[in-house]
Amino acid sequence: MSNRTLTTKQVSLRPFCQADLARVLGWRSDPASLAYWSNRRAIVSDEQATAEFYADLNGSMHVFQTINHSKYGEIGAIYSYDAQFVDQHCWVTTYLEESYRNRGFGVIATAMFVDYLFTYFSFRKLYFDVYEYNTLSLLSLKSFGLEVEGSFPEHRYFNGEWHNLKRF
Image 1 (tube, rainbow, N blue to C red):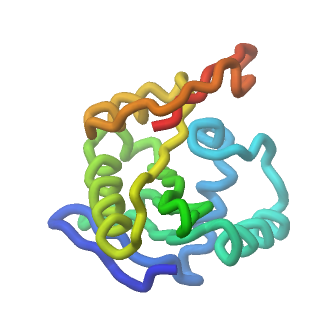
Image 2 (image 1 turned 90 degrees about the vertical axis):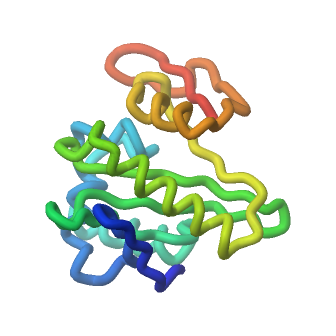
C-alpha cells in the first residue's frame, strides 16, 4: 500500500486512514452508483461491508487512496488491484460521488494515479474495465487516448438489459 500523498492545486490523493472508513463504506454501499464501478450487486450490512473492505485492502487491492478536493474535501476513491508483478499489469478503478462527476476531478485524479503507478512500479499496462452504460467513464478513458483491448459481450445484466464490458 502507498503512504504517499499526491497533490495538485485542486485535487490530492492520500492513503486510506481509519477516519475514512465510514465514508468509504457509504460509497461502497451506494445503490445509485454501485453498478458503475463495482462488481457488487447487493447492499450488505455494515459489519459485512467492513470485513469485506479490509479483506480487499489486505488482499487484492494494491494501492487505495481517497480523492480530496481543496474546496470540497473527500469526493471519491481510486485504487489499483490484482497487481501482477511478473506480467507487469494491474487494474484501476475510480469512484467519485455523483455531485463531483463530469467536472474534471476524476480525470485529474486518474492522471495523477496512473503517473504514480508507472513511476513507482514496474507496470507495462494498466487496465480499466468499464460497462458501456457508464458513458462518462468511457468518454474520459477515450480522452486519455486509451485503447479498447477487449470487449466482453453481454457481460452484465443491469436495468433489465444485457450490457457489454470494455477493457481499456
